[in-house]
Length: 380
Image (cartoon, rainbow, N blue to C red; front, side, top):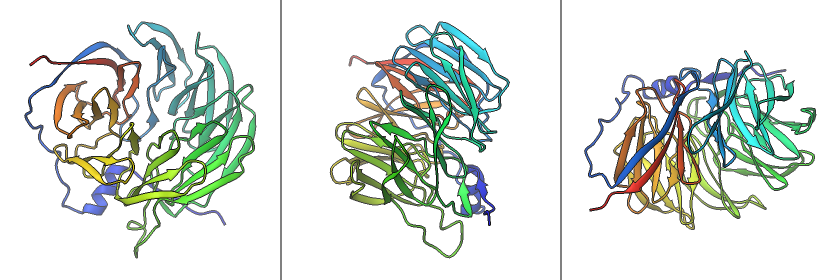
């Protein structure tokens, strides 16, 4: 018998968990600027709808930037100047993407539609349906496009034709958060997080399972306390994967075997990022953490953005950058977590994680403001 699923939006979930004791966003603290952040360009691409918590994010192939809107419009811009290359109107209710790779831009919709376009001119390559809402950006390779539905189906489509190659499903808890972990293709492997707190590795060729690692295990007497969704972005290093769950743990997992090297308590719905020495996480309270990559021991924490609904903090130059619910970008020192710069991209939330491409920081708000920034140190 098919389960009835209840998907909770983040705001509703946090309100339910905290009852009437919901913290207001922390006021912006004063700081001494250490960086000059210059806006290179800004464009409008249409709403991504903050209430629906859609998985609409900016993407890049290293030369151009691609963006989409919930109303079905898809855009391509040059990275350095923001010059528009093309725009395609689809009238599809888009909910995730774009994913970019192998000369393709791939977007997905609330009705399970998956659409692939040519990166050069926006020409339609193929369109198919997988029959389930998609809230995670597709992963694209020469062999396959991987999509993840909200009911825990991980599906491979032929990059050439859109034909379904395989479909892997996992048991979904009765109560889950609204969202899904974006799948990642690494060589011949597909990585994805599940709603029961597990990290899954599949063979790209046929969807067979390589390993399954329990990042967190559901515990508690009620459905809310048992939520351990692994919905956030995976941080993939040379040999390791770093994953974090809601109400659970952040862990370092060996990519080839699924062995967990270290784990520590952490709660996040946005995911993790990494650089050569640290793993970075924004927890549900709005505290940014830098963890030692080898041991998981905290190196520093920055609580100044409490309750500001931060994105995953993204490494950029000598900083990590996170967007917030009021349209601010916060730049923190990698060394000690101190605030070194802050810029505003209007007043609408930044839910999509910023992306860094060839020294340029690209950001998208829920109202569709797409902007590119470059930072340079201030001389003192």
